[in-house]
Amino acid sequence: MTSGVDPVGRLPEEWRAAMSALGEKPFRAEQIFRWIHERGVLDPEHMTDLSKALRERLKAEGFAPPAKIAQVHAAADGTRKLVLELAQGARVECVIIPMTELGDADAAAAPEDDEDDAASETPGKTRITLCVSTQYGCAMGCVFCASGQAGLQRGLSASEIVSQVLLSKTLLEPNEELKNLVFMGMGEPLHHYDETARAIRLLTHPLSRGMSPRRITVSTVGLVPGIARLGADFGGKVGLAVSLHAPSDAVRDRIMPMNRKFPIMELIQALRDYPLPQRRRITIEYTLMDGVNDSEAQARELALLLRGLRVKVNLIPMNPISASELKAPSHARVVAFQRVLSEAGLSCFVRTRRGDEVSAACGQLAIADDLVRKKRERDAQRGSGT
Ligand code: SAH
Image (tube, rainbow, N blue to C red):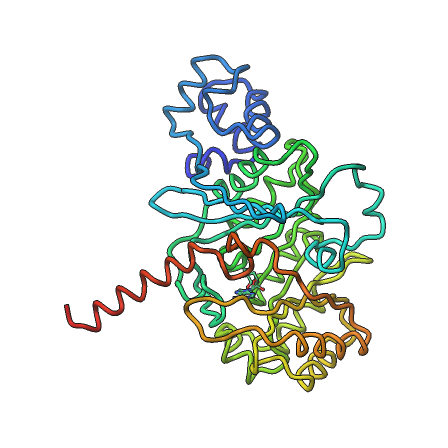
């Protein structure tokens, strides 16, 4: 079993098995796990308290950093987008997002809303939310999303997912503290469940002094069996965000093909069944698209649909992508939509466009746009009969 798992993706018990296979003492397992997940050291060469012989053997076994930072783009608002290079020519982006002195929009981007959060805050520290990818491209086909239009290239291993966190941490300033992790980059985490769940286990393992699962939010198009599995495997502790984007199957079928498999009422039932702890809420993401899902009537329909659910709604004016003509509504329409929801008693935020100038905003990950361009070129070549 162990030999199949990339070393950075191994859990402590798998390291123990690997060490025993090498005739090493069990405590080595804990040492190596902590080098990787507590200190972010991805190269055995730098694990200085291991014997030279063991370091050599680890390297011979194929233990090498699973990702490397190829580019860092910094925006004036402090957002940093990292381009990471992975094996087989895959490239993904992850985004470091500082939470400024709580404006509503920042509160909306942060997944947690526990009242005791203030107590866990370190004074003077800037809280960071990190957005990571789980796949290179995406199979879900949402029409407003560049990754969806690019199609799925491949899923990331848990070690590649975790590496995004470990490498991003090396770029944090001394006054910055990683607080929240959101699976909202490229890909559909619940369509790639096993590696996503393994990454969460690694990141929250007590030995790595990692994050609490409630600081992690998994965002999904609404894969109903995946939502149930996530709820059962992590006892509801992992935060859940659902990309709803429409209050009716007629509209949702058009913009999110997965809705034909898991229609809205099944999805809403899955949200009701999610074992959400007291005082937590599910995040409903709603990307506003001009003339598609942004009318006041649709806002009323949405409010009705969400009645009785413990949710907060994040409204995201759509970011333009090259693969689609769809665009954001006017500011006035966004405000009108929000007003209907607020008046219906829903907690509702409009998300600011952080990191716009480095194309780090939702759906604007440049790599996805790149993939779309390549796909079009291929399609055009096929079409011209060459
Ligand atoms: N597959 C997951 C997570 C990745 S996308 C999911 O669908 O939730 C993260 C969020 O960005 C989703 O809510 C997605 O619908 C939204 N998004 C994608 N493209 C966008 C765009 N062009 N403008 C605004 N939001 C977009």
